[in-house]
Image 1 (cartoon, rainbow, N blue to C red):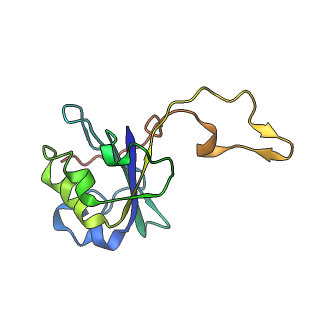
Image 2 (image 1 turned 60 degrees about the vertical axis):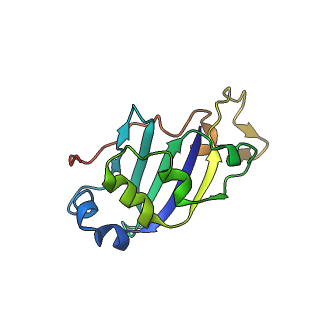
Length: 144
C-alpha cells in the first residue's frame, strides 16, 4: 500500500459549493471518508490555522511507484483518481482540485528496541511502526 499526500489551500475547498459544507462551520478535526469495496481511504484535516487542508489517500502501490523508497516521490492526480472511479464524485472533485501530490509506501515494522541513542530521541510519527491510519479521530458529523 502507498500513501498519496498533499497540502492545498482551504480557499480552494471553500470555493467548491459541494465540498464547502464538510468544513464550513465545523469544529476542527478529521474527515475520513472510505469505501471498503473499492478500498478507498482518505484522511483530511486542516492545518496552519485552517488555511490549508492536508489530504492523505491510501491505495495499492502503483507499478510505477514500486521501486520508490523516498517520502516525496511526485505523483499525479490521475494516479489517484484512476484507482477510485467508484467513489462519490465529490471525493474525486476534492482530489482533482488539490494540486501536487507526493507518494510513499506504507511499511509495517517491528518496534524498535530503543527510541534513544546518545542525546537523540525518536518521537511522534517517526516512533510508531504502524500505518498512519490507526489513530483515533474526531470526525465531522456531515456525511456525503
